Amino acid sequence: MKDLAKRFPQNPLLSPADLVPSRDGLEITCLLNPGAFTFQGKTWLIVRVAERPKQADKVISFPILTANGSIEIMEIDKNDPELIADDARVINYKGEDYLTTLSHLRLLCSDNGTDFYEPDGYPALVGEGIMETFGIEDCRVAEIDGTYYLTFTSVSPNGVGVGLRTTKDWKNFEKHGLIFPAHNKDCAIFDEKINGLFYAIHRPSSVDIGGNYIWIASSPDGIYWGGHKCIVKTRKGHWDSKRVGGGAAPIKTEKGWLEIYHGANEAHQYCLGAVLLDLNDPSKVLARTEEPIMRPLEEYELKGFFGHVVFTNGHIVEPDGDTVTVYYGAADEFVCAAKFSIQDMLSLLKYD
Image (cartoon, rainbow, N blue to C red):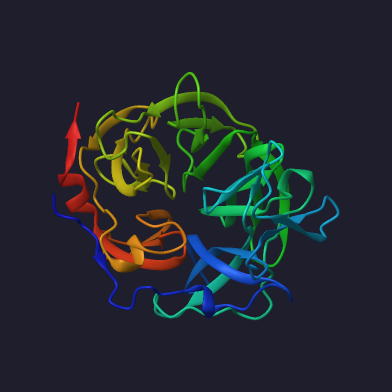
C-alpha cells in the first residue's frame, strides 16, 4: 500500500546536536515525539529531550531525579551478572527497572513550521515529585477556551502514568498530578467539549489478560475522569498486532473524529494508522484503516536510537482545512514532519 505521508525535504528537522543539554555532565541522546500547537501566530513544539551522561566502555550510567528534584547518576558495571541490558531504552538491575535516559520537555517555536528555535523566557518542564523521578515524556497538547491542557507520561519506579498541567501563557503552569494512574500513557484530550463533557483517549497497559489497547474516557472538568471504554484493539497478523496507542487530539471532520494512532508489531516496528469516531459519541468506532498510512521508510526512520519507528503525538491542521502537518519522532532520535490530506485518510477507512 502507498504511504500517504509527504515528508518534509528538510527532515530531520531537529537532531540531538541541535539543542544544548540541560546541565553540565549530561548529553542529549534523543529528541522524541513532540506535541504541537499554535500560539501567538507561531508553530510550537514541546519536544521530549532525553539525556544521560557520556557512556564509558565498561559501565552503564544514567540519571534519575530524586524526590526533591536533584539529579543522581547511577553507574553499573556492564559485566555485573545482575544487569539485564538488552534493550536500548530500559535496563533491569537487581530486579528493578530503570530508563537509560532521563527525559524532560522543552519548548521550541517557528515562524514557518520548519525552522525551530528555543525562545527566551519559556521554561523547560521537568519531572517533579516521586511519581516523576524517571522523567516526563511524550506530551500532547489540547487548547479549550484559551487554556492549554498538557497530558504527558509520568515515569517512576511506581510505574508509568498520565500527568496533567495547564497553562494560558506557557510561562506559568498549574500542576494537577496524575489523572490516570499506572500503568497508562498515550493520553490526548479532545480540542472541544462534546455534549458538555471533556473527552480523552488513553492507553492502559496489560501484559497478562487483555492487551495494549486504546480507551476513551469523559470528564466534567478535565481533571476527574470516568466512563471508560475500550475502543481500539490490536489485530493479530497485522502491522498493529502488538500494541496500539493514540496520537494527538482527534481531528474534527464532517465524517467524524479522525484519530491518527500508532501501532507496533511483535518486532517493535512502529507505523501510523487512522480510526474514525462518531461526532456525538466518540466511544463509537465507525471505521479504521487496514494498512498503515505511514510506515518507516527513510534512513532517519530506520536507523537511530531505536530504529524502524515513526511515532506522533502532535499535528497542526492547516488553514485549507484538509492539510495536516504531522510532527513525529523518527527512530526514537529525530524530530521530523510530514503532510497528510484529511480526505486521503478518510478515503482509506474501512467501515464495519
